[in-house]
Image (cartoon, rainbow, N blue to C red; front, side, top):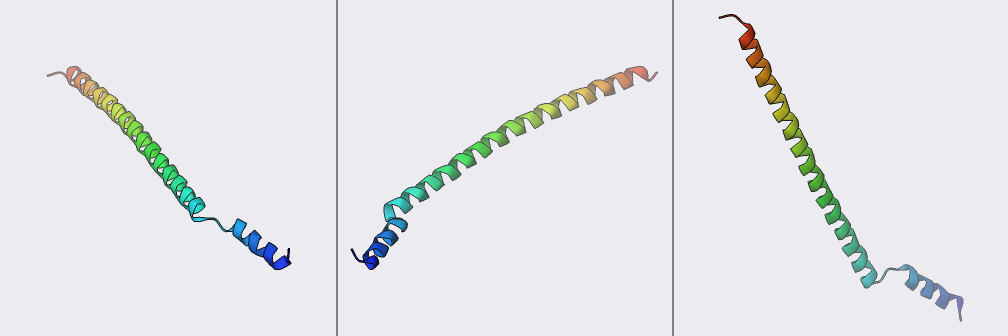
Length: 74
């Protein structure tokens, strides 16, 4: 086999085929979609936690305000 033919075969192996590019693109899209789903799930959890903390803060402030009103003589 001539050296030129060997180089051509090596180039063919190194160049991704349409199928390879398509699979790679598909895998990339799946990864992106999975990451997006994970971000949405994390955002939901963080929002719920923030709401719980805010509710606890409001409850604490209400009880503190009620105590302050009871301590002030009318």
